[in-house]
Length: 261
Image (tube, rainbow, N blue to C red; front, side):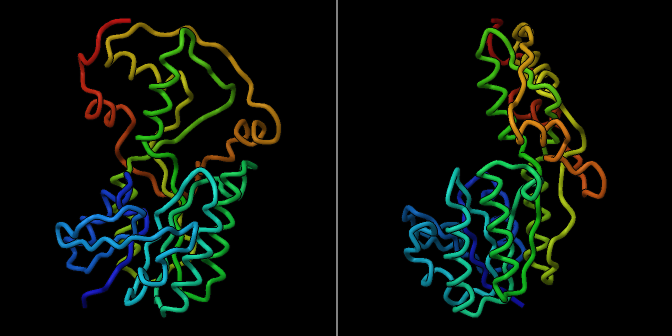
């Protein structure tokens, strides 16, 4: 049976992978975006702003399922509450949300908005599914690119990351979106743990650049203690992706790119 699916954040990194999967499965897909654009590849685009609450009611009208991918540096909790109110009024039957590993453990303001969003989804009265994922390879690459422009490489003591491929997260989300509501499902993380120097090393090698000397730094406060304790990780009990950071870099950066520096 064909399902009508509304995707928020459907034009972002994750949405760019998920939307084609939903279309390929034969479902009607509508994407909520802040900037108008014409329909393309069988996808309808509707204009609205979740944080302002504008256009949301029209966007959810007629949708059986809502896949909530939209996120930003602040206000995710208020945006999610606006979406939940509209989805409940429209009779949406399945609400799927992407969150981040550590949302309930790392005391950062952004993490708090993700946790509050999770709670809004769970308390919505709509059958729901939430997946917590690790940082995407794309985000790790942005971070490494910025850090390796410095003459020394900041190396926060005890900080480890478990980056996961966005395409693997997208495939899991498509599966969950087309399945029955499942509540909070197992986390999805990458197959390997890295500290900052081990993320930077293969990037510099592929760019043909010299290693940077490490500058040990300490993340202060409660957040620092949480990261040193690995609260941003799910080492046991998570579903693990297969694509490693090194494989992602080989495809994205390529060997021999750039000049020595």
